[in-house]
Amino acid sequence: MKKLVAYITSTYPEKSFSIDLALALGENGVDSIELGVPFSDPVADGPVIEKANHLALDSGFKFTDLLDISEAVAKKVDTLWMGYFNSFYQQNLDLLIPKASALGVSGLIIPDLPHEETHKYSELFSSNNVANISFVAPTDSNKRIKEVITDSTKFIYLVAYAGITGSGQSEDLQKIITDIREYTTTPTYVGFGVNAKTAKDKVKNVDGVIVGSAYIDILLKDSLSYTQKIEQCSALSLEIKSKINE
Image (cartoon, rainbow, N blue to C red; front, side):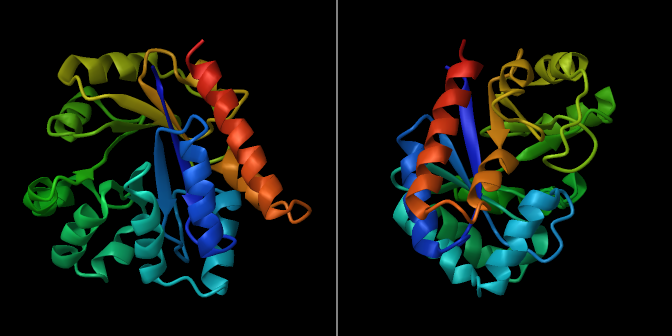
């Protein structure tokens, strides 16, 4: 069964809503929840997720909110944190990673942390059984791929194209998937540009997909009630989960 990871922006539109949405998604086809940490300059994210980030910050997001959401969700749905390095660094990683582990968080996704810097924290992550997710991009050489994924855990985040999330670009990923398989058996998930229309194509020869902007598009619709937003996100999850496993 191929996996579905769903990204949501923590506390957008409210903390209690994030908890309700995460739990609902876990009951409707989502295998892992990616809790986004709102950040003022989310360089890897497109305008949809960037807008949600700014709205969450404007509403007063605090890092303790992420901890509260995780406490309510992580023991029921596999939970990851997605954020930019400064957000985590400011919390003191030596204290934060054990806290993440205690809450049941299984991994962190940090798109702006260079692979060369991850080695400083390898023991901290591994000793607390928290994965530091490895990224591979279509522009990476075979040598670079080998370097990045040799010690990868949980899954490899394969960026579907060079660019930002939600831009809808497309690249042939089959060669890079073959290169990844040459060096590791760690599952590979494709992210960037994955939605109900593209999921079936994106999941070819990989183990799962990561979906973000398609969910946030729904959450940004002011005409929908909270209940309707959860219903539409749940329906989207079931649709994508079905398509990636056809």
